[in-house]
Image (cartoon, rainbow over all chains, first blue to last red; front, side):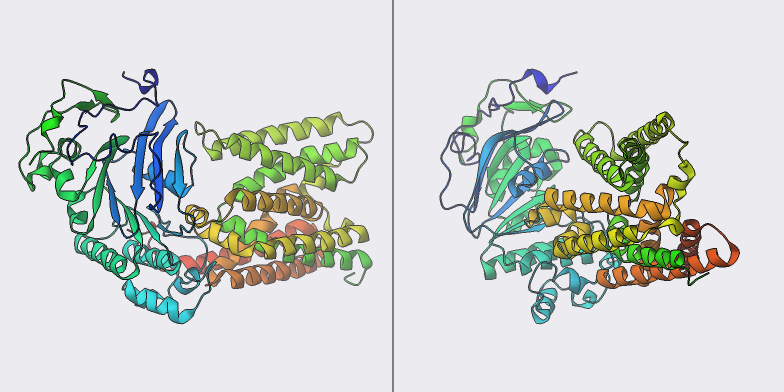
Amino acid sequence: MPHSEGAPAAAPVPCGHGSGRACTHSHATAASAPFDANALISARGLGITRGGRDQLIDVSLDIAPREIVTLIGPNGAGKSTLVRVLLGLEKPDRGRIQRRADLRIGYVPQRFDSDAVIPMTVERFLSLGMDGDRARIARMLEQVDASSVRHQQIGELSGGELQRVVLARALLREPNLLVLDEPAQGVDYSGEADLYNLIGRLRDESGFGVLLVSHDLHVVMARSDRVICLNHHVCCSGIPETVAQHPSYARLFGPQAAHAFAVYRHHHDHSHDLAGMPHPSGPSDDAEQGKP
Amino acid sequence: MIFEPFFLRALLAGLGLAAVAAPLGCFVVWQRLAYFGETVAQAGLIGVALGLALHMDVTWGVMAVALLVAALLLWFGRQKMVGLDSILGLLHHAALAAGVIATSMLQGPPVDLAGFLFGDVFAVTSTDVIVIFGGGALVLAAVAWMWQPLLRLAVHEELAEAEGVDREKIRTVFIVLLAVAIAVAMKIVGILLVMAFLVVPAVAARPLSRDPERMVLLTALIAAGSVVAGLWLSATVDSPGGPSIVIVMSIIAGLSLSWAARGRPAARPIKD
């Protein structure tokens, strides 16, 4: 069985597609590259190994103010791990993170235990550790379209209601970076589109940066400024249209996912084993791939 | 009988304990720490043997061992091969075995093991009452001081941590407080019933509460009422004190849960 232990974890995975605008990540933001002084948060060469398996391999990224960055990738690709590292909940084994001095993060976690044992109303939850201004809470609940649950117990909310309430809490903190891990879980399809529209609108109004984790590019397309496709390492990144045409995206999400977008031609520069670990394979002709 | 000094001391100790156990018990229930506390309490038996061997008040021995077991739990919890429930099982049994061996090897008159397992609320001394009120005041002050971060952790650990709550620090302080409370309470209600005192009143209060502070208040009232009723029962029908208190609070908790369960489907509805 192929095991990642043999491979030196810190070694960058050859992507081959050094030129072309589809893959802006690979060489410009290598582990040794300087931090982007303007970015809200910058990471260089992040690596995490758990139980002998590489969860993150040489991941570098920057999130600029006002920018909506979407992190996509299949289940188990290390998306949540990357978010946890960026939030400071987990220490990376390798690499560095720089946060802007005034960085204030509003976080909407992936799963919010909805059968909370603790008795608490939504309003109380939204004032925990904050000033608790009732008028402000009411306004924010209205913004996320959850006014009706203000006096309900948090343990009695549906998944979608809870998601909106947690989003309201994140926004009440007046963040300059909003981090949402799969915010559309437990929300139906139209609710999902509403949610992304809401986030986009709030970004336009308040000017915070957004890091959004999703396993589906389609719905987030319209609102993302940049998409990073992650499968333990950064497979590709760029504007949504470009990533949708990138072979890594098609390989990760199936040909149907790419079908909606323009035709592409490309030979894969690396493959993923059953555990999703990237392996270099075959000659690379990616130089062609960025051309129109 | 109810105006005898020993009865008044038992009443005072029980009421003091009810007040201290209420906020801790609520967090034990909110954070699903009941089995954790059970393990720490069980380990108290080693502490009893330690205290007797060193001719010290057993309270100190219990406190030391409780803290040691809590530290071991946190340490073993760092690995991810075996779940926390299994680690608790390991320590639970190891502590009980070590405790029984230690007490059996003590020299001198045979140790009244049942006394430590079930406690004797009527044997409480004036010093014990002072320790309960003094230590209790300290524990309550500490809980009040970190009330907000504790609540935030109880709602959602990861969210609280991402927002800047120092999870490690708050959790460590809380476990120390729990160990202290268990060591003190053990003398009154005994090792086996100490967790009942921490868990049962909070369970009784949960279905009747809509915000955290009122649940703590209600927990304290239920515990205090159980102490009064239990001691009265004990004096009337000559039943053991500690178990009488626990049986009263258990009946209240049972009724409260039945009320909460009425008209609900058998399986929990899956929320999504």
